[in-house]
Image (cartoon, rainbow, N blue to C red; front, side, top):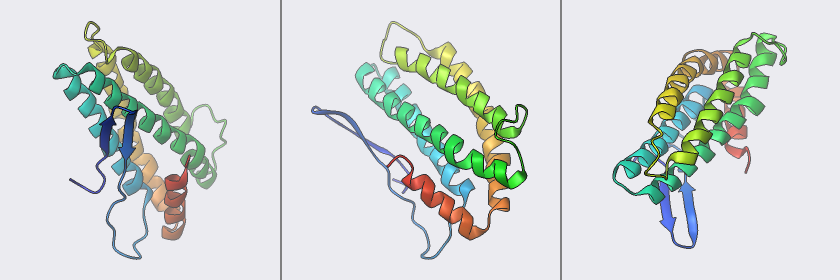
Length: 179
């Protein structure tokens, strides 16, 4: 199993527990935004995939638990971006946080749509009689374009705009966020 893979342990007394292992890194190597948040995209994709594998196998309860873990992780990821990353980006490039047409505003609007669709899927994932396929297709259509904007534009722009030390400090704040 890779260092960044999430492990979901299901126990009778608890609905779920997510364990995240930090990546292996060379001692003294500074972390970059692209690496930290790109690997979180991968971790979240694994959780979502596990939910739909469980659903396809007929295990609605496991599907609900996996998707709840995915939902919680994605909400945290979005909060990190909106509360930590976007303000740093806006300050570095001279954008007003209230700019209605800037790149972070586009990403914020996409976050709203992602969260709406996430809730729709979360309400149906554990019910074998309901098919979340249409909502999931719409979700992935928005999410794939969104991740492209982040991984090809926002994260590299931050990697470029911040010194390696500043980037590493921001990654440390991301890791501590919500703890």
